[in-house]
Image 1: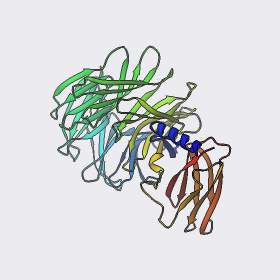
Image 2: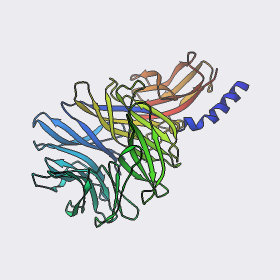
Image 3: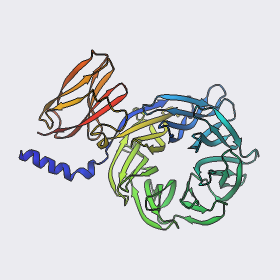
Image 4: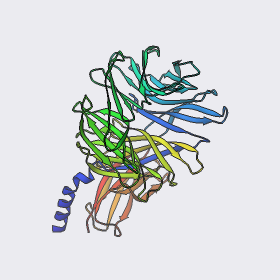
Length: 465
C-alpha cells in the first residue's frame, strides 16, 4: 500500500509534465511526381476539414492547385484539381458566412482567388493582376467584420518585391489594393477593432480598413527574426511565431507583443541545430500549442515538432514525429486544433530524390482520451473492462463485440509509443478477452484504446511494481 501511495504522489507531482501529451493517430502521404505541397488547412462548420496546396500535373507538365475535403478519419470526401497549364497553387482558405470557401493563391503570374461551395464546385473565380511584368501571389487571407476579406502576399516588380495587401467583397471584387515596404507578407490577422495586422519576415504592419498605415515596426536586436504566423491571445495581445537566428543556426521563437508591438516576452526554443516554428494556437489555460520543424537529436533530417508551453512561453513538453517513416525531411506548413481538441497538421515531405509529397496528420490528446473520447463514442452496449487496474505485471482486458466489426486494441505508453496491438478480424460477436503482459515494462501510466467500426474508447492503465 505504501508503494502505491508513493507512486500516486509522484503521479500528482508529474501532472504538469504529463498534461496534454499527444499521440499520432494517423498520417496520410500523397505521392506525386514533383513538388506536391499542402500549405493550409481549416475545419469547416460541418466538422470536416479542407486542405489546399499544389501538385504536379503529369498531363500539363506544370503545377495545379489541389483542394481536398476529408473527415476525421482522413477519408477523402472530394478532391478538386485545376486542369490547365498555367502553373497554379492554392495557399490559403477561409470559410464564408454562407458556408462556402474562398481559396487564394496564384495562377501563372497573377494573384488568383476562387469560391467553392460545399461540394467543391467553383462559384466564381478572379485574377487580380494581368500585367505580365508583375508577379502577384496571395499567401494569407482573413475575414473583416463587414463580410469583406483581406488578403496579403507579394507584388514582385522588375526592381523589387513589395508587401501587397488587397480587400475583396464576397463576390471576389477588389475594393482596394496597395503596396507597402519591400518584402513578402506571410500572415494576416484582423483584430477585434477591425484593424489589419500584416506579418512580413521581421516586420509587423498595422493598417486600418482603408489601407492607411497606422504603424510599421521592425523586430530587431542581437538576433535576426523571421515570423510566419500571428494570433490574438485571450488577453487581447498578440503572439508571433517563427525563428530567431544568431551566428550559426535558427531557433524556434515565440514573441508576445501588445497592440503597439511592444515586447511583453520572448522565448527562443531549440538546440544546437536549426528549428523553425510555423504556427501556434492558444489553449484554454492561456498556454500554447506550437507546430515547428526540427532535426532529430543528431542533427539529421527534419521532423514535425510539437511543443506545449505555459502562458509565459516556458516549455511543458515537446515531441518530434517522423511523418514519413523513412527519415525524410518533414516540412509542416499549417495546423489547427479542432472543436474536438484534436490536432491536424498539413505540409510536405522532401524525399531523397528531391520530389515532394503532401501529408495530413492527426494527433489526439491523451489525457482527454482517458475517459470516453469526445466524439464517435462506442455504443453504451459495448464496454471496455480492465481488471485488475492498477495492476502488477499483467491484467485482463475485455470488451463486447456487438457486431462483426474489424476491431483492435492498442496499448500505448505516455509518450504515444505503441507497446502492442491486438486485432480481431471479423470475429464472432460476444465477449473478447486478452491478457496484457507488462512484466518487462516499467511502472507508470499506459493507455488502452479500443477501435471498432471507426469509433474508439480509451482508458488508462496504471502499472505498479
